[in-house]
Image 1 (tube, rainbow, N blue to C red):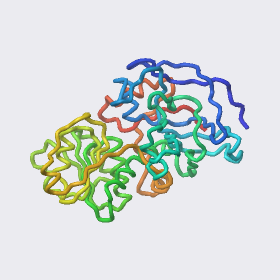
Image 2: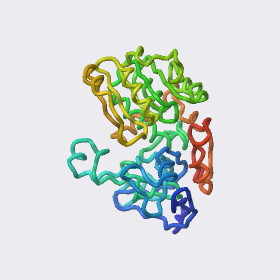
Image 3: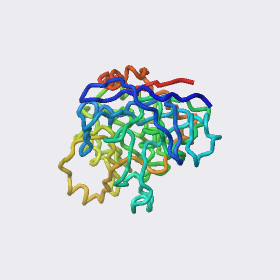
Image 4: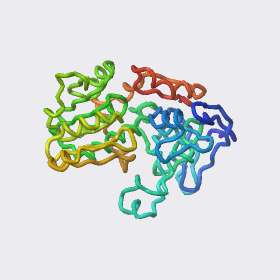
Length: 344
């Protein structure tokens, strides 16, 4: 077994828009946990929100916090109740830790657990560091065909898969997606893996509209184009990935009667809804908050020849450059930035 140091590097958010490199103790795994040496961490929009604003809704950063939750790595130590045969295993980590005892957990809604501990959600530290611990059953083995970057991106891909499941997609579905950023791209790939025939995407940025066609979209439009009429789509499902209120409203108008709208993007805390439209078309409007049991599906889907998660990666940063990674979204050509913590 490789010698494990007593301290590690950590990129710590010490106040808004300030990341500081610190030495932290290496955590030790509890009986049912594994210790993972981190390899790749994707930069998520929520990381950027915490970095720039210090909060997301009711989740407020009140003390120094390690960000990052899209993570892959290799198991280097195990707790007393975990087989030592897992040491050396490449894994993708599911970043949530539900209590497993409450009603939500007992009824299969672990993502809604009121006692949830989630990487990089205050006050729980994330994964922009050398080592993390995780429940052994939430450290999912990944096949050799997936790179460390792709394994890290199974987390946002899980969001796309969960959204498509909530949208009740079926083979032949017509899907409308607003926002061609990383989550929009992953939702588009997920929709195609569910069997959707048509995936129409809108975005304000031309480069993203062009790029989304490589990620499962069958058509992409500028929502400001006067020739684009969302109402003519009569989509079976609408997945909102931009967080923009006008996009949400256009998506609701794009649905057929009985269609399903799924809100994924982080947007305004309150918006005015077209209640009569929702009622007269009997639309179903729901949200997405994380996921349940998506990793096996994500791993299987990511091995299909039509899905290459590595193609989303547009920039790599070292751990010491985490702050630059968090600012990389200012580039409209950016799709997904990865912080490389260690390599094989």
